[in-house]
Structure formats: structure tokens, C-alpha cells
Length: 618
Image 1: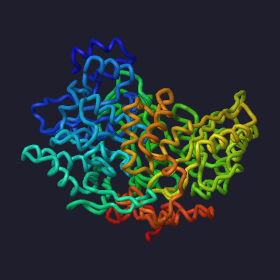
Image 2 (image 1 turned 120 degrees about the vertical axis):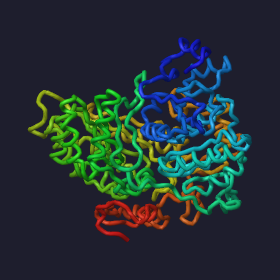
Image 3 (image 1 turned 60 degrees about the horizontal axis):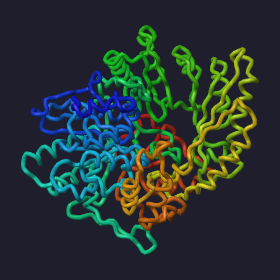
Image 4 (image 1 turned 180 degrees about the vertical axis):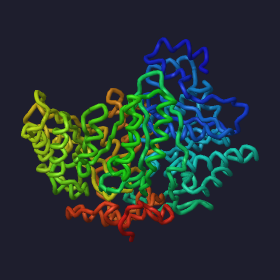
């Protein structure tokens, strides 16, 4: 329940529904009857955070325990923060309205590097010291999870612990340990020493980093009983792990206002640029019966009329046709739409198109990623131009008139011919529409090109690559636009200075902690939002801290260099990544996991089990 002070300022801010709590299916408990209070923090706006599936899963799982109360906390927008600071109102949790400082465990999900300053801002707004060394009491413990934790070093000074990999099971072990330490009167140091023994928990203060004269890392030295390598956690059976029966229904419109259901975790494809495709391995699927049952319960408990079947590659789900049959048995009758994001052009079947034609029609989205076959082979996309054009023909014959294509600029080995190839491929898709006698009559086609700037990421075959400079990416954007010659094709692209900063922190080390704090103290927050991004302040932060950002972006690494994340184990063998890196320069592809196991190593992190349809194991 929010305080009277908060009630007074709500009429002064946009979208006050972000800050009130009390939504349908939110969980309220008696705080005197729980042993641990957990604040789950999303370092972005309410609309972004409430669209994220991970927070729904972990919130529900924590609250399924009688001894834990998990509440939600989001970053207040600029107008709300201004009013809170002027009136000395600390950041609070939505369910109880209690200040963050009253919680035992404060968890942040780190989904994107450009959210880092919001973490510091939220802690400060709660009256909590931003540096872990300045928080000497046992509680609150600040924990980070999410994909950015595969290289948490640029945030190492601000967090007590990091949780690597799947969060469902490791969260319970952290809860149990902290409850036990509270009851026994343990110190924070004693808790951290014990936490470091939990598989998947990384305690950054228990590791010393030594640097070479050239600025590269010379050695990572664990202290005491801390393991030399921290191995991520993996949930083996998605059918058995906790999944919510209810989602909180927001009062205000959020980005993804629907039932979202994860049908597949991991990816079989091995695209060499894609961090998610590697760090979420091994491949695990839910059964069609489990998905169908859970989707129906969620629709009944929320009133939502749309289901999005979520994964890195939905059309790679082996039971998709069976699942669609089961879902359509009741969704058509109940007028519930089914959305299938993340489709592949090489397995977009006639039958799948038939299922899609029975639900609410929207534009189709595919990701060729590169404009030429040579570059698609270099990044191991394993998609041919004919497969893309064949899919376009099927789509247009099926009544679709809008196609969105995702590409990247700045990929390793990319030439200006590859950039021009993006426009040429889009033009061929347009031509397919007008050359198709079965196309929708009386309608035109719209092909939308969305172009991201490539950022090399840890645990990918491109983790050693140099990132294109800002000027080079701008030239490539201009070259692409100059090759688009029809209004049937629209182009959108990312701001390159934001991608530059993302690249710095994606592969950075602990020396960047000072940069993050300086930038935050000088006004940086909501850095992923164009109207909030203060690039000049970031450049000043690098200069004041004596850091050259190009050291992290424009420098190609040797395979022998110790990388900031080498003491973390995400199940992907370094020799496998090196092999894939070398194959990229030969434009040599690697078959996906169901054709032949490539020996990435993720099968061993799951007890020797990986994708059930893999034809061979190495």
C-alpha cells in the first residue's frame, strides 16, 4: 500500500498507474510471517519491466514459498524521481509501499548494458550505498542476474553476488542460505563465503584482478575457498520447473500486454554473432501438453486474449504442429489470438502458414541478418536466398502484404557489397510480391528493414573481434540508404553511439566501474532511451577516469588473451569458439545441433544431456 506522501505526488506525474501497485494477481503477504523479503528490481520503466517474462517467473516462484515475500520495483521515470527526491521519498516496492532499505535481498535483472546507471540510481534513491564495500551489514544483499551477468565485471563493485544461468532453482538456494545466516547472526563476510560455494553464484569481492602493462588482464586470483571457475546453473526439465499460473495484469498499457509462454530454452542454430544462442544452451523443450495447459490457465486467470509463444527460434520447436492443434481447439472458440515470433525462413511450412491464417493476421518478421550469401555463411546463419524468397512467395500467396526483415551492420568480414546486398535482397522480396499471381489483389507490399549495429559479445565466436567505429557504421548506414530505390522499402536503424557504449560494457572489465559511477553522478540514466542518452557525459566520464573506450571496442583480441569473463563457465568450450571464429573467415558453415553435434560443450553442463534430436554426439 502506497503512503500518503506518494499519493500526493501522483497527480503531478505522467502515468501514475506505474507507481500504485494493487494490480490483479499481485501478491500481498503479512511481512511479520515471512523470514525473507525480496525486492525484485527491473532497472527500466514499469512498461518495459512488466513485459519481461523472467520477472513473472521468478516473482511467482519466490512467492510460492510461505517464508519469502517477493515484491516488484521499477525505475521511476524522470518526473516521478524529481518529486520523490524533492520530498525525500525513498524508492519503494509496489506491493507493500515499503522502502527498499527494509528488504533482505535486492535483486536486479541485467538485461542490457545501457541499464547500468539505472541500477545505481535506484539504490541511491532508496538511500542504499551504491558500492558493495560500503554496505557492511548482512542485509540487504544486492544480487544481479540475467544475460549481462555472463560478463558482470563492469558492475562488479556494486553487487555483492551474481547469479549465473537459469534463476529458478538457484534463487531458492540463495533464499535458504540468507534465511539461515539471519537466524544465526552471521556476518556479511560469512554469508558471502558460503554463497560462493553454491553452484552458479559468483562473489566478485572474492576475486582479485591483476593487469599487464598493456592493460590486458594478467591473472584472476580467487580468495579463500572461492572456486577458480564459477559454473552457470541449468534447469534440466522445463516441464517440472515452476511456471506461473497467474500473471500480474497492469493498470497501464505495457509493451507486451499478453500471455507470454516460453516453449523452448536454448537454440540449435549456432549463429556466430548471437550471444543468447550460446549462453542459454543446452536446448530444452516443454511438452505440448504442458504448454497448452499452462497457456489456458494464464488466459483464464488474466483475461488476456493473446498468447505469444516465446523462444529464440519458435519454429524450431519440434512439437509446434501438435501444439498449434491443441491450442486452436480452445483459442478459436474463446477468440484468443496466437502470436509466433522468431520464425525461421528455412522451416516456414505450408502447414504452419495454414495455422497462422486461422489467427489474427499481422506482419511477418524474419531475420536474414546479412545481405549476401557469403556473409550469411560467415556468420553461420544457414539460410539461403532461395529459402527467403520461397518463404516470401508462400506468405504473399497466403495473404500477407507486410514483411519485416532484420539485418546487422558491422559484422566481421563485412564489405560494402554486403551492405548493398541488404537493399538488393529487400528489393527481391518486393519483386516476389508483384510477380506472384496469387498475391492479395488491390494491395501493395511493404518491406521494412530494421538494421542493428553489430556488437561483439562474450561467449560467442566473435568475442575476439574489433567493433566498427562510429564513423564507419554511419558510412555503412548511408551506403545502405543510397541503395534503396523504392518507397516500398523502409529502413530503420540503431543509433551508433548507443551501440558503441554497449560494446564498451559488453566486453569491459572492473576498471569501468568508476566510469559507470561518474556518468551516473553527472546525470546519466535511462541511457537506452534516445531522449535521455547523454553521450557527451559518457565521453567525459571515460576521460576523467583515464579510460580509453576504444581499448574495449576497436581492438581485436588474440585467442590467448585472458578475457574478463574467462573465470566464468557458461558451458561453451573456448576451443569450440576459436574453431567457429576461424571458420567464419572461410565462410564455412556448421550444421545445426539436430544434424550433428558440433561439440560446444553445453551437453556436459547438463549432465551429458542436450537436445534429444541431435543425430550424433562428440
